[in-house]
Image 1 (cartoon, rainbow, N blue to C red):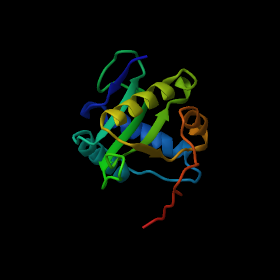
Image 2: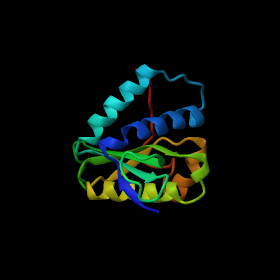
Image 3: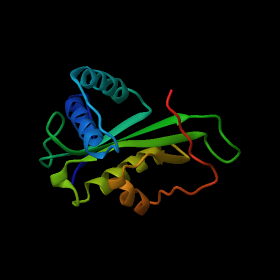
Image 4: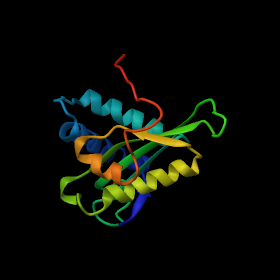
Length: 158
């Protein structure tokens, strides 16, 4: 299986997989319209051009390359915070993991997560977080993620 970095040519497929993730994996119903797709594509292009973002993909056809249909993808973002006494202050977030149903169980998710985590290490991130759908929980726990730790994760809508 060939894991590669996404390019601008992959944006339509990245948006398609993001939609699939939300429709199939989120615990509530959503509706996605053309305005959302355009906004998502615009942001994906901006992110792909930035240093603190990476998207890793698997082509549906081995070696097909940028612009071809994708089987799976994952994103990673690294940002700088004020450092603590023993770290760089860089943290990572892994998101948007999606694998087409027919490609699940073939190791795409594991290989993509490994690539994303390696990239996060190369960016000197000291820790990484993510939100998991129910279907992704076992993959992330197998990789070492847990909901235990010295801090609680809290969130709110703005």
